[in-house]
Length: 217
Image (cartoon, rainbow, N blue to C red; front, side):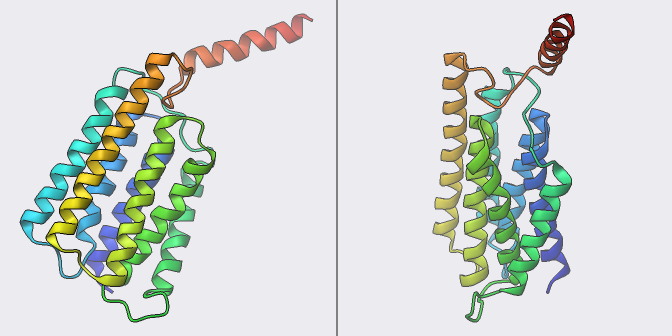
């Protein structure tokens, strides 16, 4: 195993954990950006510099499209129900499983670190896809799921071709546009918390009011 690939895999998983557990919108998007930016580097041999640059531009554009909408919606996200320590342990356990099952019964062409990181992102994506009640977290889970599947493909079949990398970048940009579109529609419809935001101050005030009403009764 390569120390550089292990470090890149750790950064990718950490970005996924931050994206799902952060309650601050810029921090959550920063985590997603880190995952998308570093994931192409978990390969042996590394992609050509032009290919890496294309993936960097695609990742930045995908995150920026989502940021355009959510930056004006509020600074608070719902965050993870489990909390970041549990999310981190889940990602670490899935990474170890991915490393231990490298090749899935066949001889792997790519690095085991890629499959481990892919397993971790897939495991992290299950919670928001299945249990999330807001557009932002569900979409984030979908992005992580796609990133995880692509990393498993790298681990099994090796470094993707330049054309495949280009298609992957376009796909991530499309997902970023989908996040922006769905979030904008939810905001326009006036759905409370529809984009994953909530006003913490108002929520606390409501709880205090309800508590007073119960005591008054």
